[in-house]
Every structure is written in C-alpha cells, then in structure tokens.
Image 1 (cartoon, rainbow, N blue to C red):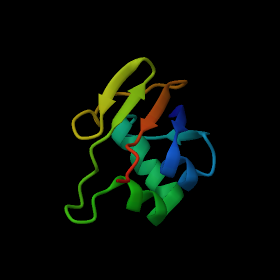
Image 2: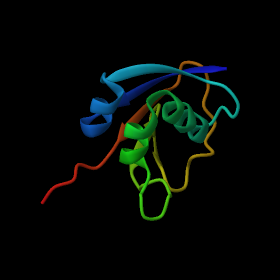
Image 3: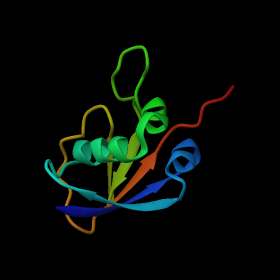
Image 4: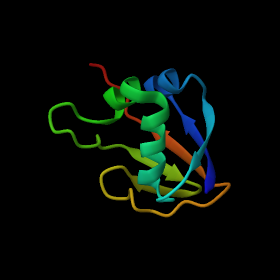
Length: 95
C-alpha cells in the first residue's frame, strides 16, 4: 500500500474539501489506481470533474508526481510509492 499526498486546486479542491488530502492506494499502486481510489472516496462529484461525460474518458490535464510533470491522458500507469506527492493541475474553465 502507498500513502500519497494529493494537492488540488480550484474545482477539484472544492470536491475534495481540502487543498491537500492523504490517500491510501492499494493495487495497482499507480496514478490510475490513485484516481480510482479518489473516485471511490469522493464519488459522482469527483467523476463529474475528471471524466468527460460525452466520451467517458478521463479529461486531459496535467499533474505533478513529485517533481515530474505527467499527463492524465497518457501517464496513468506511472508507479507511485509511499510518501509520493501528486498535484492535480486541472484547467479552469471560463470564457
């Protein structure tokens, strides 16, 4: 199991209820596994922000895994380890 600190901003912070939350991730210990655990914990409000309702696919956005910038659309298989920090850098909508 990996305990990961998740830092969030904007609408994701609103869903998580805090700027930083700690999440325990079981198998698979990957960024994708972290998002499945966040979905399990925060349910539909989290899903509505992260997944595209038209395609059912995760929306494109950047994250930071420790000091490495990764992408939601291609890097969900990155391994995570106990003590890692993930920042969800979700784009702000508007116009």
